[in-house]
Image (tube, rainbow, N blue to C red):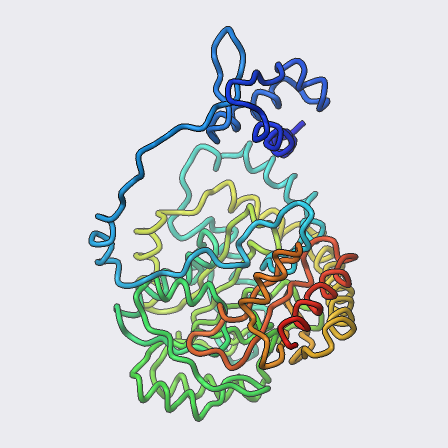
Length: 470
């Protein structure tokens, strides 16, 4: 049995331990191995976990016993209030999409695809071979493995039209996940207290990275085609901002993509104001319909900083992405990235490289497109049937989520709490707005586990909405 098997033993024993009196003897390792069909190593791993949780104590030569409640004097952490004053303000707590779901919960809150949507066979084989390779015992280059840099550059160059100079491998900086890349961009290119322009709503992780860097996010007006160029120009001029964070393709959470005409207009505004456009291309691999070409393919003057993730599409355990930047800004970003993480694990880079270069990777993405379409349409039908008072603003052509507008009288945060009490996890939309929300929303992930339960989950959400509206 694996580590997950040990975890299951721990979860199964915890209720028994909670009900047992202090000092009760735990079943022997032999008894547990027979009960769970587990190896002695797995049982030992489970017992170490229980000891680490403070639920059990091991007495050499005597066995393991349930720990009783211990009385501690109250901890006084009041001194930390003053010491943390220098942190520059409150950073948001753990976001809803990162919360773990209970085993029997219906999870519509996550920002990641379910395991069955990942190229598991490819990933396992690639990690095994990478662990046997040279990178298992050496550090990697600060800029990334050359083969992976070349792959990222070639992918973007393939979308570059004639007349535009394509990026080179040197322009690619491999990062330990694009969240780390966004943090470096905000730290390196904006000073504390300075403004960064963004659409609203926008990715909660970008708002978190901005908060950690101490920069101020200023929302810009958008319509069905993308950011309104006139408002973007006015906002850049008014604030003096030199960074515009955007998700032009399958935006999180709205699912929107910019039209080609709007793309050209926005690039023109950015160039006019001498600004950088940070293009978060997080959903490149999750197109249900054909994904538009990246904005970076239409810029060779260094205005667009392209952020490309593999973490969600390859595996959440393979935290690898890229920041692609040209000109002096590339060296500025490299200095910050090297100071933060020094380099990315060569094992993870080698595994990611092997996955994306394997001929079956493209076949996997084609299958994934059909799977996402089926799940998206099922969840959309379920919302329409069981949440008739809500409205899906647009059926996304890619990505992982539905962005659902609730009636004005519904409190999205309260709805999230009410649904959790009934075993359904959703993400209230308030986390995606850099300023006051334009209305109550929830984000529902159609790429999560067990799509057969989508109707059940939306029925529970619908009932909770009705209770609020009475």
